[in-house]
Structure formats: structure tokens, C-alpha cells
Image: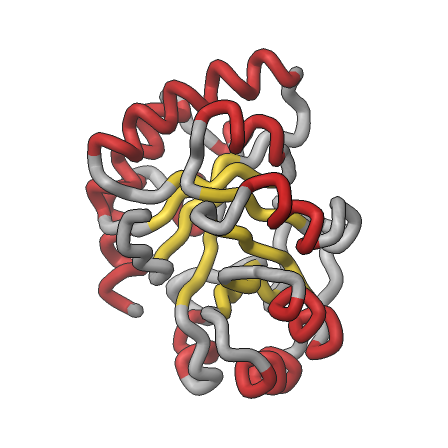
Length: 205
């Protein structure tokens, strides 16, 4: 397995792109400093997702950046992605772990210490905690306070990735929590210059 740098994860959303293909956006984000890519496609057929994932993986492989597939464990296995990220409404983490094996990465979204401890116990490699701030990309996301984020960080030993509405302005608030990384969507993809946006976030980290 490649050495994992969790610091800056781009979560994809093609609806935010300004006249470019997702493949181009991902490459620009990596060139700006993104250390992980999570391919998230909620409104896409299995076949279309599979074909897109293969194209994105050819880019992430070229830059030695891990590609994580959101929700679709079957797609992650099919393209031999670095791992899969699942939420609380998906199959339990221990089931996903049995499907992907011990070498693949498993990320789990959590909103509480209880969920975090359970995910770690069931084999998660890292946790996505949020939504920390209001976000337009997932309007039904539960809010997680910064205090709960700190509590989760103290309760587990695996890396913590902050998610939800994170940008250059509020990133300073997260530094006091001791988290290991952040995942962003619009703070990179919904910007005029994707490479620059990623570079500025990386510098803030």
C-alpha cells in the first residue's frame, strides 16, 4: 500500500465544475496540493460510475495519490481503488472490511464519539467527522460541534478528517482541535482557479 497523506482530501461534485471535465479538475487539484481524492457520485449509473472511476484512477495513479470511492464498495473493488468511504446508513464497517480486505483503506463518516469508537473497533482506517460548518453540497448533514470533534479526536487513535463547509476562513478554527486532515468540495471545485484554491488551503494547513 502507498504511504497515505490524509492532509487535504478533495471530494468530487461535478455539478460545481465551471466548464471543465472532472478529470481535468482532479488533476488541477492534485497539482495544487490535494493529497487524496474521494470520488463521490450520487446520481450516476453503476456503469457510468465505473467508467468514470477508471479514468480518475489513471490520473491519481500517475501522481501516486490514493483514490477513495464514496459508498460504492463494488466500484472500489472493481477498479482496485485505494479504498472506500462509507456513511452510517451504509453497510457496517466490519462488513465493508471483510469485502475489501486488510490492505485497502476504509473511511467511515461519524458524528459522535459512540459512532467513532464503533467504526474504529470494526476496522476503519480513518474517520470523516462532520458536518462541521453549513454546507450546500449536503444540506441534510448533521451538525457536529467543535467540542464533539475534539472529544472524538481524544477517543480514537486513527486519523480524523474534518468535513462539511470547510474553507480558508474557518479553517483556523479547526487547528485547535488537533485533527489530522480536512475534506473539501466547494472550497476547491467552486473556485475560478482550482489549482490555486488547493494550494492556498494546503498552505493554511
